[in-house]
Image (cartoon, rainbow, N blue to C red; front, side):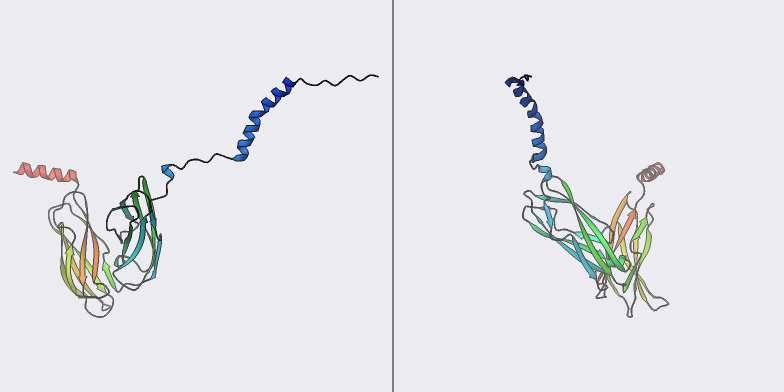
Length: 268
């Protein structure tokens, strides 16, 4: 029996088959190699401000009116950095910065003060957000840990709020109570705004023998809206030489002020 010869596909058929496999091979090659590296854009640039540390732990501190933490930073970018806002997590924090704009390579120290007479004793953790612009809006989060002791000087209230809706003066007291022997003398009282005045009041002794000194804050007619002010009290206590108490004054609403002016005009 004679076997039939095996047929061989023409060369053109083989060539077309190879060409058909080229897209598949190319796709597999890209899959193995992975995505192509992307060029770094301006949005992926590193932040302009670099802090030496983002957490300061003061630990257990002695009784004092205030405590300070310091955060050093450098403008490590290629453009100027402008700090647009300092946002503390608590009204007992008083952040301070020498200026707003820092050139490339400049170093500075950022101060964060804790007004301890406004806080309960015990471990605390605070934050302060630093908003800045180095060509785009950014923020840095700073952390402060502190363990506050029982205060030897208690300020009440820790912050004074006065609602002033009339031109008649309103007077509210601030009391400083010394939890140890000896008299507390107030040496001076100043205010941060002409909208309020402050003067020394009377001295008292409570049933436990603690001495208190009084400061009287008076608010007369004020413009509409919210007014953030401070009363600064200088004492002869070496541990509390200066006590600062925030005073928030809420003035009348603009609508109420407009009605009052209209009524006064009619009476005239």
